[in-house]
Image (cartoon, rainbow, N blue to C red; front, side):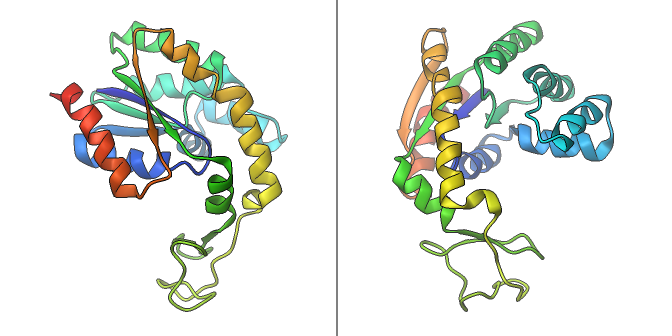
Length: 216
């Protein structure tokens, strides 16, 4: 089974993607993770990507698709694409890649959450710099304010989680990635839109109801 999770930053794609890998035994493929791994391993594509990242530039679509192609050549299970594709060029590249591999896309799931809720979620996020534990001042605070439950360090917000930055990221999503919904609706692949503003278990249950018949 091959799936795409589309949704704005903070919509919960990473959380649901992780749950899907557990439920179906498939691989979660995040381009952010791919980039970090390729740079750390010093692959040819990783070195190419690092050159753009060090210059503060966006990594070109062809490099991203190349990283995905490398991984897909080594994966023999299903895949849930989390945060990929992000642009029309990436979507077209993925379509060609899957056709070349003879591995059709089974579904596209769009996780929808309103902008104000997304800003609240992301701007309220706090991450421990020592152990990586994640909290949210609104929904999942530390037991003792300012003290990580796991290691005792002080969880902090990331610079790109500031409200102004979050709103810019959402604007980029609306301009570049949201149009992919229409791209996939024009394809033979089924597109499902779900409400991601609900509790995690409710979203997961709806996803299971949509995907279990495909898996069967």
